[in-house]
Image (cartoon, rainbow, N blue to C red):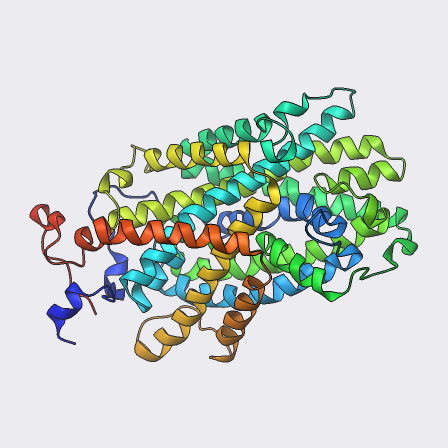
Length: 486
C-alpha cells in the first residue's frame, strides 16, 4: 500500500520512533516522579484488593446464577494467574520498548494499527472506570461489616443497588469521589500514598495468614470441588479481575524516571508477589469457614467471626478498606492516562489532555471519578466485575498478538526485556484469555458489544478525521507535519 493510502487507512500505525516524543494534539506533559518500588507498589496495589477481600468469598460461596466453587476457589485464582502471567510477560516487553502512557492502547496502535488501538483504548475507558466502581462496592461491604461490629446498621436502602433491593450504594459512591480527590493531588503524592498503603496491605494479608493458620479446620476443605470443574472455570473468569493490576500500572510508564529499565521489572515483581499472597490467603479463607457460610461481600471478616474472633474481623474490615483503596487509585490512574494518551494522539478532543501545574490531567480524572461513582451506586458487584473482565481479557489478546507480530515486523526495535519462548507464551496468553472470555455470561457479551458499537460511531465521526496520523487532521493547522505512519 502506498504511503498516502496508509495515511488514510484505519490500519495506519503509530511509528515506534515517535513514542519518545511527548508532543501531541495538546501541549500537556506528565511529570516523571516514579521509581522501581513505587511502580511495583502501584502494580501490587492494583492486583491485591477486592479480588481477595471480596471476590474470593463470592466465588467460593456462589450466588443465584453461579454455583459455588468452594475451596477450589484456590484453583480459580491459579488458572487466572497462569493466563495473566503470559500476558504480563508480553506487557513487560512492550513496556520496556515503549515507556509511554496508554498501555495496551499504545501497543495496539504501534503494532496492529489505529482502529485496533482505538477499540482497545475505548474498551479500557469503560473497563477501568468499571473496575474502580466494583472495588468501591467491595469496600462498601467491609464498611458495613465494620460498623456492624459496633452495633451500627446502615439503612438497607443506602447500602445496595436497586437490583439488590436498595436505592443507591452510598458508601461506594462516596469512596469513589474520595479516591478521585487523592489522585487529583498529583502523581508524586499518589505514589507516596500508594507505597505506604500497599505496605500496610501486605502486612494485613500476612497477619491474616499467620493468625488464620492456627484456626483452620481441614474438614472445611471437603468437598474441595463441590459442583465440579465448571464453576471453578467460571470463577477463574470472575477473579481474573484480581490478577491484572499491572495492566493499569503500565499506563504510568511515561511518569517513571527510567521506564525502559524499571517497567518490565515492576510488572513481573508485582504479579509474583500478588499470586503468592493469593494462594496463602484463599487456603486460610476456606479453611476457617465452610464455603456455604462465607459472606460473599466480606469473606475474611465473616471467616474470623465464625471462629470466635470478632475483634480481628473488625480490624480486618478497617484495613481491608484502606488496602482496597489502592486498587481504586491504580485503575483510576489507568483510565485517566489512557484517556490522556488518546486525546494527545488526536483520537479524542485535546481538551481532555489538559494538565495542571503538577502535570496531572484534572479534567479526565474528575470525569472518570464521577462516572465510577455512578456505576458503584447503582449496579451489583458481579455484573460490574464480569464487564471489566471481558474488556481486559480482550486487551490481553491484543497485546499478546501485538508482541508476537512486532517481534517479526520490527526485530530491530530496542528492547530492554525480551519475552522468552516466543511465540509459545503469547499464543498461550491468547488461548487462555479467549477461553476465559467464553466462560462469561451472554449479558456481559451484549453490554460489551453495545459499548464497542458506540466506540465505532465515535471513531468514524471524530477519531479517524482528527487523528494526528491523518495528514488532513484539523490539528495540523496548529502543528508541524507528523512523522509518516508505518
